[in-house]
Length: 399
Image 1 (cartoon, rainbow, N blue to C red):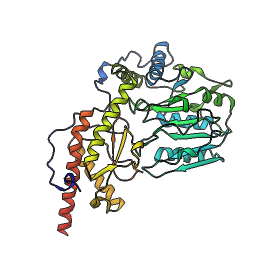
Image 2: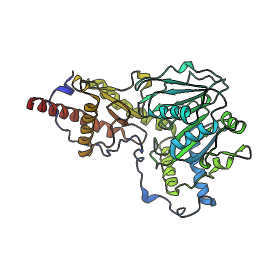
Image 3: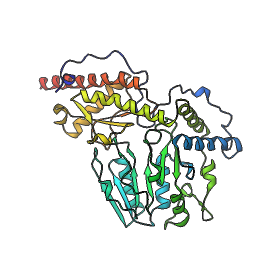
Image 4: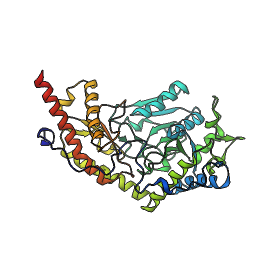
């Protein structure tokens, strides 16, 4: 083992300027200031002309920043990415067979809903353990596809979209909540794309974005699912997609303060150069952590294939035998202790692995995170692990 994990590690002196590395809700963008928000639309109907214009502005500027094709629709829907993705699944699945790809908790949730709630009979679930991808090439062009682009709870992303045919009959449903604004999305290979405000751009939670290709619109208008749909899932009006929803007339009442927060994030994204700059910030953040991992034998990436490493939800596992020899409960307790120390020191908040993931750490590297803060944080990881080792050594010698 290298000296990072064996020699006495002095407590670092330099702390990150901002300790918020949560994977959702995520850190606000640099320069964020609530006092600068316009408040003239608060307390007004969201259907009045000026508030509705602000909602439409979120849609138009989001589409522009992402490079969404001109013939796609984009709308604001309730309940974050979960609401957006569930809306799509409940409204559109059932016309043909479905292939679901599962490799972390949220994709597992979608598979469970499709199997046990929607009860789709012609269903294939292709599943892999945390750290791996299932075989994506098994899907066929006549089937619908459901997958997450970037596994927020596993740190595993799809390396490309080569496995999806451009000429296909099925609809491709992509949960892109921790990929949108951080990774290139190949819209030619996608039909339904969803994300939330609170991820890469660090806006307030509670609202989802639903992007639909012409093929997805056609499915909505031609297929009536054999199930009742709650009001917040209904996109069809008189047999056609309700275009008003995609022009700022939201299904339910939005928070106009959250709308201003989203517009603030979009303004920041535009000011730094748009999508390419957002992606570069994520890549730069990942590279900082990756270089540290390469030099540290006590920690490694949770994903097994470097081609699948996420640049946003960076999931790490401890590989030192002293830690891996423990039971899962003991490992979780150790991680909790180390995270508590880091929080008490004011250097990192909310960085434990997702509750259903293997014991470890999850660092957010989205575009609102400063590379310099990650550089300042990483020595604290070495300190926390060494501190834990020292405590374990003392415990063993007291037995």
